Amino acid sequence: MDTVQDIDSLYHRHAVTVQRFIYRRVFNVDDANELTNDVFRVAWQKQQEGTEVDIAWLIVTAKNLILNVQRGSYREVRLRDRLKENALLTGRPHESGISAEVGEVLDQLKERDREILILAYWDGLRGADLAKVLDCSEGTASTRLNRARQAFAKKAPAHLMGTSGASNARDAQEEV
Image 1 (cartoon, rainbow, N blue to C red):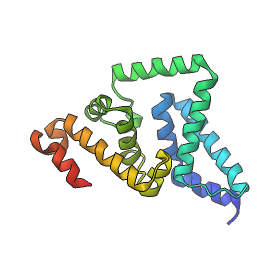
Image 2: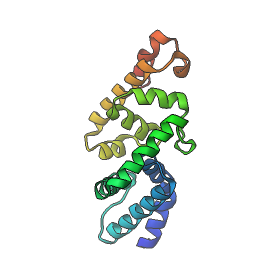
Image 3: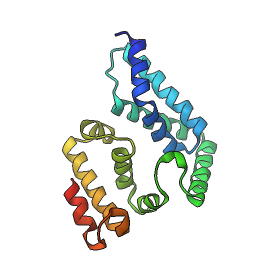
């Protein structure tokens, strides 16, 4: 298969996940679409150089491109922050796929726990891909995910977890 077919296939499999990942960080559909296109442009270039590109590589590249944009323009960062505040005041954007109630619990968590839960449950990353994005071993990623689940379960209302309040954390532990 040639590089054009490879990147086309990669795009069709992962573009939505990459776009959602970016949108949750920039809070602007146009910027998210543009950055998503940039991610796949870089992926195409890297594939031509022989780099193996997978979902974890795409997410890491997206993170790096977002950081470049944030470093490059103070005004853009301020705008992103204002948009984020607006999204929190008016409820989470529909595109994120996060219910308001789940979003409230996520907002109570440490950034590290929130990030791994979103990567695992909204972006669908598991095992080696999750570890690659987090830049750690699979075992460490699994442990971090387990701890994040426990933290979420402790803060979540019983009806959200589908359990009695006292058993939330224990049930989250058993799911692992």
